[in-house]
Image 1 (cartoon, rainbow, N blue to C red):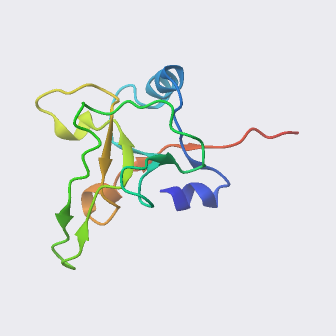
Image 2: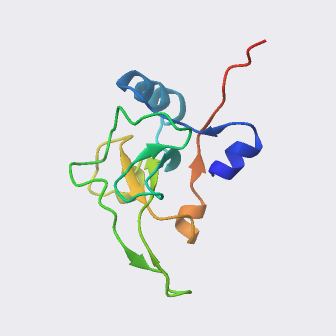
Length: 130
């Protein structure tokens, strides 16, 4: 998803405040219809979450106090061990029932299976200085 955003001269969204979270919820997640990739990763250093554009992580909205939890799983096709290095928003959409908090974040694995490759990403772009 980040590569697709970069091909359009953007990147996946960064969410740096409660106000930005509310804007994303009201603009893209109402009604909640899917899980979306956000521009957060700890792929370089486990537990060292950062925004893909280099901005510091100053605000989070993880699904619960147990997140991010870095669940490790084994790819059934390749046998490769894969952990959760990427952030998504609207995680509750996948895990219902029971109903969870709407528009929260979760860490998930890379896009290597049918479920995660169908997720959309929300892109953002720098303002045109002209």
